[in-house]
Each structure stands twice: as C-alpha cells, then as structure tokens.
Amino acid sequence: MRKQTVAGKLNGSGFRFAIVVSRFNEFITERLLRSAYDGLLRSGVTEKAIHIVRVPGSFEIPSAARTLAETKKYDAIICLGCLLRGDTAHYDVIVNEVTRGIGQSTQETGVPHAFGVLTCDTLEQAIDRAGLKMGNKGFEAALAAVEMASLRAAIGLQASGVSKALSTRHAAFSKKQIPPSGRNDKSIGRNRADYGNGTNRVTKPAKASRAKRHK
Image (tube, rainbow, N blue to C red; front, side, top):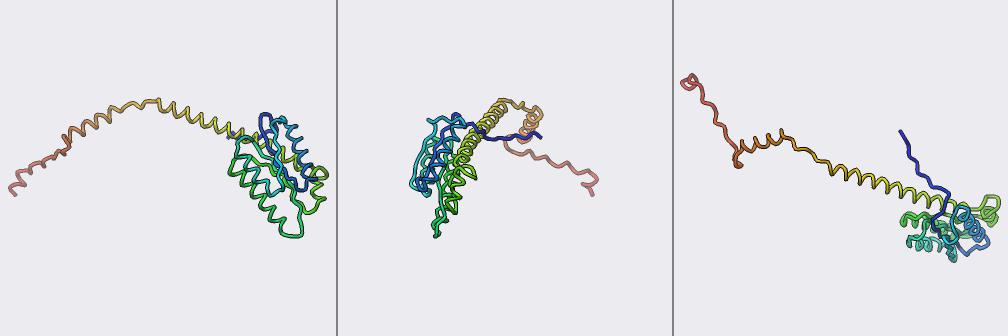
C-alpha cells in the first residue's frame, strides 16, 4: 500500500511572521530575538515579512500573540521570553499560564505558534540556551515556525485537492442516467390493472364439486 506523507520545509519564502518578545530579562531575550531573526532570514524570509512586537513580560506574550494571530496576516507567531525561578511560587504560576495561553491561542486561531520562552532555574541555564552550550532557542523557534507555516500551507493544498477531486466525481456521477427497467414498468402496469381504481379485485372461490355439495 502506498503511503502519502506531508511535511513542512525550511523555506519561508512567501510567508509572513510575527515575533513577540518580552522586555523582562532583556539581557537574554535580545539574544533570542537576534538569533530568531537570523534564522528567519536564513530560511528565505524577507525583512519586510518579519514584524517584531515587544511586550513588558512573558505573561503578556499570549495576549499579544492571540491578537496578532486573529488578524490573519501572519503564517506563524514566534514567542520569545525568559522566566527564572525565584523564591516564591510566582514562577510556577507564570510558567503555567504562559504555556497554556500560547497553546490555547494556537488551537483556537489555527495559526502556528513557536514556543521560545525559556523556563530556567538559574541565569546560567538561560545563558547556555541563548547562544552558548545548548545552542539558541530563539533560532530553534524560528525554524519551527517556518516549518509549521510550510506544513500548514501544504495541508491546505492537499485538502483543497481532495475536495476538488470529490466535487469532480460527484458532478460526473450526477450526469449518468440510470436507464428505466422495462420489466419493472410492466410489473407496475400489471399491478395497477389488477387493482383498478384503487379497489382490490376479489377473486371468487371456485364452486365445490358436486360430490361434496350432495354430501
């Protein structure tokens, strides 16, 4: 059996992207932003097709991303931020809300959101993930956004092709004429003659034989 596979490509030519970046922990988020921007350019995205939106902190990222996605002007949204664990439960609350908000925006708008928000215990961990030992998560988020934008377009084209094929088959089927069955027509005519004007014909029982009548 032949298997069909649909996959996105790392070619962002013709797509538009928005980058939502947090100003909080700017020392880290600016590194993420520069790397994400570079990743988009390396993937064939033009500078005019990249819009940067700055928000106060990571908590505001989902709201801005949702607003941008609902404009339908962008093929993907890249979310960049940095959250560092503190001495209170504030960190856990913010991490959960940011993650939930970005995921919800993705599902409800249908526009891919790339998650580039660092959630680290220490500043050293964040630095490692902003261009040192662990690479740069901003660059990775940009590539994910490009691939998802391409995949979304590919799925749309495939769905459009399937719909068109089904419409063509339906139109061809509708043009076919089913020939009437002469046998069925005769049967129908015979039934009508038997029943007359809606009154069933009653067949009289045969006369009993003379031997039985005189018995």
